[in-house]
Each structure stands twice: as C-alpha cells, then as structure tokens.
Image (cartoon, rainbow, N blue to C red; front, side, top):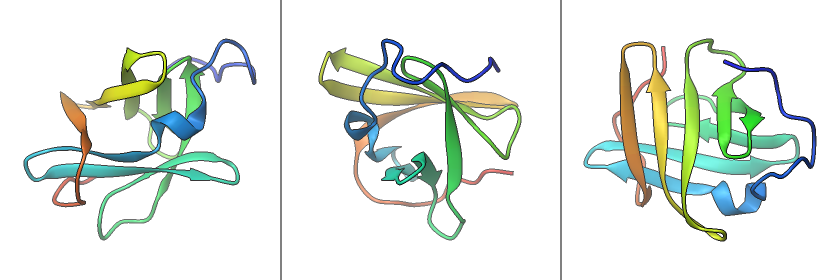
Length: 103
C-alpha cells in the first residue's frame, strides 16, 4: 500500500464514509473517531484506517488489508471494496454487522 496522503489534499470528507457496509452475511462498520476512521466487525476490536488516497485507506495494524470507497456522486458513498490478502470483496453501504474476519 502507498504512503499516507497529506492532510486536506483533495479528499472525501471522512463523515461521508462512516456507516455500515455489507452483502449477505459479510458486514463491516466504519466509524469516525477522534483520530480518523476505524473499521470493525462484530466480536473484533476496531482497526485504525490510514488514508492512502482520496477514498483509499489501509488498515494500520494489518499489512495487505485495504478499503477503497466507491462514490455514487460527490456526497454519496455507494460501496466499499475490501482488499484482503487472498480476495477482493465489494460491500454496499447498508445494514448490520455479521460474519467477516480480519486475520
């Protein structure tokens, strides 16, 4: 993954990215914290996200894991694409937390 993006450089506001994303039983929660964004799955601790590009982030504690938010328009997030070591998963913005696991 790339180096973190300099603060405030042509970026999507973090508030627009928070929410629940899922397809079927695979659901994650993206939350705004005082330090930026975190991603969590029910039963696991939240992982801090580090911005690599306008709508691209990686998990600070887990190399090889990343999230890219797909924008429907300039203020609406349609989905998030999870990049995992052995697969890529697209989750639509929505619902409740269920069975997906990091590491």
